[in-house]
Image (tube, rainbow, N blue to C red; front, side, top):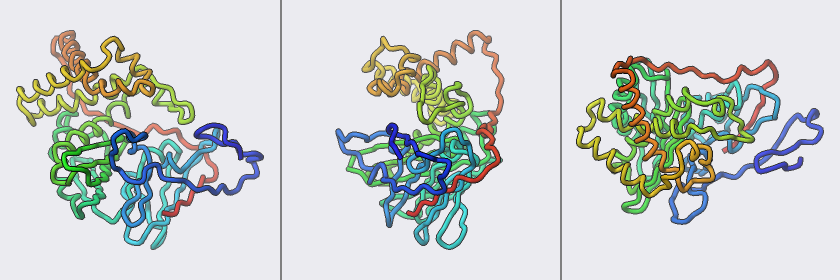
Amino acid sequence: MTRQDTNSWVIADARRLRRLTYTVADTWDQFHHVDGEPGNLYRSAGSAYQPDSAYVLNYNTFVGYLEGHARPYEVRFTRPAGYYGASHRAPQPLNDSVDVVRAPSYRALVDAPVLYARPDTAWLQLGRTKVLVALYATTARHYAPTLARTLKPLLEAQQAYLGGRLPVDSYAFLVYHAKGRLGSYMGDGLEHSQSTLCLLESPGLADLDQFLRRLTTHEFFHVVTPLNIHSREIENYDFRNPTFSAHLWLYEGLTEYATIHMAIKQKLQTLPEFVQVLEGKAREMRQFDNTLSMTELSRQAMTRQDQYYNFYLKGALFNLCLDVRLRELSGARWARRSYCSSWRGATAPAGPLLTTSFST
């Protein structure tokens, strides 16, 4: 085997390959914020293997694919006794110690992170949508029902905002919480087609309420953009050589605008409170480069990380202005409709499964 670049290897005489064995390291040992520590961000796209506590598993960190060969996947986990794998693509038990996950493609597999821990879960039913809330917390047990009660009115408001129907049949909130310093709050979330993985740090669970409400509301709205409304760069995402479109202002800006607009439209806050949120975003956006357009920043998202947070500020206000202008152009006539989503993953050709075994 020859390592070609950061994420790929060339296997000589691969036609004879029957089994490939390798080990992987986790991408973060513990979710704790240290000022100036490199790699602090985007841990929700990584994995952590923590014996006797929890395993946060993103398949992109330990499962690969053979270029040019689209095959179904079967992943087997050897799990510790008493652990439960929470995911929208839930691991199914083969026996007392082994679970299996099956997916039609690499894309579908990567779209379903897993939280393995001792069970702390709750279920919500909202119309036709079944919602799983799974939690691992370093400070408490059996807190998922309380968390579910916090999320329920928000999801009901989002359901009304989206026309009376949530855009998925099932959804999973996977929440990992670590105790942080007094006054320290940190959140890292990554949305998927039918789940959100949230990594949170705060002094305790009880003081998370408002912080978690904003984070989960924003991440859930990503089901609309970009997971259903998106450019060809996302529809045909190239995992090896990703390219960035000019539309991150839509994906993050519209999602953030929907998050704050839903609150006022569904009467979760007053008009003065809504205006205060807008004024706060207008003030904060002044610290960023106003000569850099939202479309250009979208293309440079990875290299201009110092400007990224402006999508949540100027991007949200941009979409507010777009909303106002569209209402002006339409004479304030607009139609309410439900968003319906379906998985558009490519159909895998018939052939042998790519099977991976992973022992925690």
